[in-house]
Image 1 (cartoon, rainbow, N blue to C red):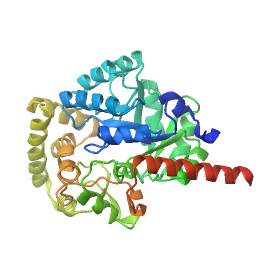
Image 2: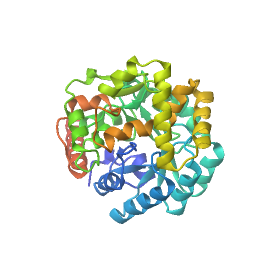
Image 3: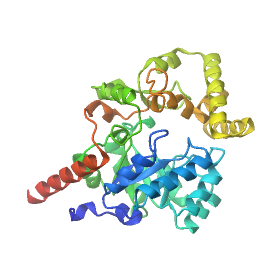
Image 4: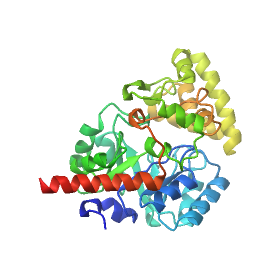
Length: 356
C-alpha cells in the first residue's frame, strides 16, 4: 500500500496505481513505453499524431497485448485522420485521450458518451476554464520548463493559479520540470492531483529513441542551455540547441518555406494524407493562431522534422524537443525503476513532513 496522499482523483479517474503520467511524445510514446509505464503502476499515453490509422490500430492492440492496465491515446485535432483516431479509441475501449488544441464539442461529446476520459494539455488558467466548458474531465498544466510548445509562466506559479481557477471541477496534473518523488510531493502541495512527464520517460530504457539521440540529451548538463525558440513555427518551443535548430534560427522566410514544403511532402507520404488534407490543416492553424503560411505548414508537418532524431538516430538533423529537466538527468532507468524510485522518494518525503 502506498501513502494515502498518493491515492488522488487522477488515480481514481484513470484507474492507475500511482499519480504518475507518461505524456504522448511523437515517435517516442510507442506501445513498449506505454506498456512499461502502465505495468509499473503509472498511466501512459500512446502517440497518435504521427501514426497512420492502420498503424494506430495495430499499436493500440500491441499495448493491449503487453499490459492489462488502462492507457490512453493522444491525437491532434488538425491531423487529417483525427476522426478515425477517435473511432479507434472507442472501438477498442481506450480509457483516455489527450490533446493540446481542443477538438470540437461534437467530437468531445462522442468520446465522453462512450466513456472516454478527455484530458487536454493547457498553459494558462483561462485555457483550463475553456477546456472544462468544452467537456474536459481533467487538465494537464504545463509550465514554462516543459518541452516542446510551452509558455512563459514557471510551473511553480502556474499550477496554483490553475488549481484556484478550476476549483474542484476536475483533477489537475502538473507538467514541466518533474523527474522524481520530491517533485511529485511538491505538485501535490500546490493542489495538483499528480504529475505528467515527457522528457524523463523519453530518457528511459523502455524508450524507443536511438542511443545516439538519448546521449545527446544526457550530454546537456545545464537546464539553462535548453532554450525556447520560435524558429520552427513562430510559436515558443523549448528544445536542445543543435545544428538544425541553429540553421532554422538563421533562416529567412523563403528557406523556412522550402523546409516546410519538403517535410510536408514526406509527412503526406507517411500518413497517407492528401495534399489538400495538409493544406486544410495548415489553413486551420493559420486562421486560429495567426501563423504565416510557412509557419503553419511547418507546424502541420513538424513530426517529420522530429523523426530524424527520434527514429533515424540523427540528432544533428532533427529538432530535439526537451524540458529543462534534461539538464539534471544523468542516467537511463527502466519505467519500473523510475516509477518505483519516484514513489519511494515521495513516500519518504511525505512521512518526514508528517512527522515534523
